[in-house]
Length: 411
Ligand code: PMP
Image 1 (cartoon, rainbow, N blue to C red):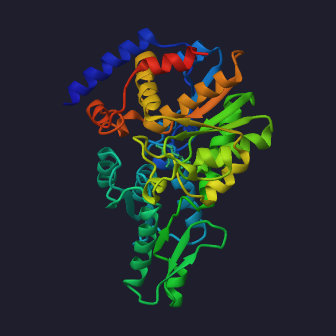
Image 2: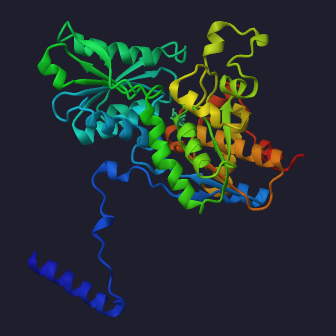
Image 3: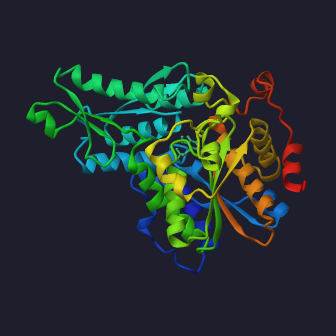
């Protein structure tokens, strides 16, 4: 085998002599990232050529689906976990467990980082999220609990909190759920004896109320967009699930230039549109039943909410406008983007891009204005619902790229 290797080396050396560049290669050790968390953030901004060319503006997508956990929520999970570590609420490789209620993406992000840092994770999610997300969580070794009915208020969030409580009290009956530091940075689960107090074993991340969610975008996503657009961003458009993205990014961009327009992309069935437009979550005139009022009834996953949370409260003051997006518009936009741009995106990304088009058309922009949005996750997380034509046809949702053509061209 030595002779094989040396023969190979000889051949390679020969090629190297022939093709060698006279320029020395600059060696850069800073190009090696430290583990999986090193891959989080600093995502590229990509021009959506089809929409930009059709409208005469720059529609720019922050490619969050390139994060290692596959979505924008990696940033939030990392910030929440690192903050909990700094506060002494989580200790690696001591059986510390992270609890969270999530539509899937945050759970995958938490489970990813948990593996890398020596934690266990219990993830509570609705039973109607696409199967790909459940599979990913299983692969990552998270304990998964699916709840139904899926989206009623926040059953998943309440259950994650309850489990978190049980986790502590199961071992020590005196266990109590205590707010981490009084600043809404998640919750430590501590036992009342002193030794345990110094070594909490459980942490309820609580992304809806946790300020680290906001902070991840205020210190990460926002500054990155500012840098990547040379400070020339005219508008930022995003949907809201917890509200962290639009709150943190929106607040940062407005702090740099108060004329940056921040617009909400809201899927059908979400109450946020009404909140922004009319000051109330629900349109009571529609006399919807309680169940329907609380359920965000859409094939779009990850955005839309019908209650006010800490991160939504942080978002509301910076939201200038809101657009309501139908499932038909979202699924059609997603197909349009695959056909024209080769971009295979998830449902919330498609909703965001429909809202970008509506905003640009409403304002009559056509002069190269930079409109930035978030490509939250990939279509690969949505094969079983949003990208499943049979499922959509059974649900009565039309797929028609003509809908997008109309959005781009009709007066
Ligand atoms: N898109 C996807 C796929 C998501 O999972 C989420 C988070 N629930 C969002 C968008 C919305 O982000 P945020 O929670 O920051 O409002």
